[in-house]
Image (cartoon, rainbow over all chains, first blue to last red; front, top):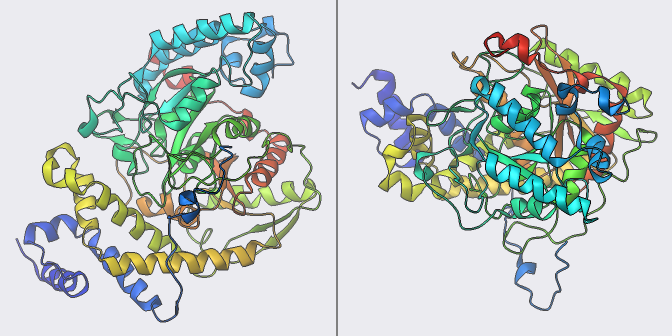
Length: 73
Length: 479
């Protein structure tokens, strides 16, 4: 059953995440969705402050450097 | 504890001995791995019906391995401090020939044909694996309320959770079932259960310990590490577990120091900063008082105490939760489509929602991550370590989760998964209710040696780690 607040949440989810959730999905997710929306907005707010900062990443190019010896400890 | 005549020791004293105490006695054949293993199995048999800390007890395997260790030591082939020591493995690590469930119905019948890297290392060192410990489903959560394998309970108080996700490992140590246990930590899962159960848990620097053979929850946040009943035991375990593994793409190839060598109890010249901002702004006053009370102790040991802030760390916490949910939803994407019925409603809902985050959200989080790593490195440069509560709250009843507690339970720990920095939790007091409080000590990247040194000095100067849960009194039906 859709409620006024659930309808608002549904609209916010569509605006921020670009996804249309069913009434049931909104009902199930209404505990977590407000935090997720806030997190997404928070990070969008950081965009300008981060300038050209590159993402932290897991890829270590050194592991593909076949010239490098590995001590294995 | 072991200085006392070995013959006069009770079984309980032996069960709560440390690896550092017992290893020389095993090496000199004053204690047999077979005796220790039988003691552990007897305690599991007697008490674990109340705690549910194990999913699989490997009694036959443990007896075989203990006998093999006894024989090898008798033949002069002593392998080191873990040789013949009964340990437990979180059921998030693959174990060759033994059921490995990951706490999930998805893997309820899975028997791997290989060992996780950390299990390989423990076996090669002669450790005796007693079994696989219970955990939160897919390591996602902090109360070890597993809907498929049952709730794990805290040995310190009946009906209370032990923290999570490595709640089985923490409870098994606190109950004197094992002398070391493997945990894993994506947002709290080694340190927070260690705090809740009054034991020691270290989350090493990201890349220090191989995760090969450990089920991912979030690749960039997951860490493998040991849980023990003493800091020296954590150092001895780290000596064994740390090191490069090319099978783990996150593993870092750099020298591993002897973590136990520098533990001398002296903090002269150490600069330690408490971070009250964010980490101590909300939570249980007993926890805050317990952590504040550590400062004069550290000072009396020679350390200089300062206070710093980590600006934007709350944003780092939020970006860390986004990272866990995004990566978790990605890893489980196929199962969410093909076997949704195998997930608990909570996991299904959360991982399904995690798919909503966009690539741009995730990448912004990783950009913020680099920024905060650089910021933290600058702040920490003149310092040796940061301290704060491991968790701003103690364990609570397993039933009836207060709505703000899921966030509290990870608030102080997720930031250091996000930054990849090493962090250890050790006991620093008890609440008025008699529940353990954990002190978190955070170090610079790859400087586990310093946080172990500080933790060890504090442990030696206090008696918190010597308290034991009154298992018999708490479980009268079993006495």
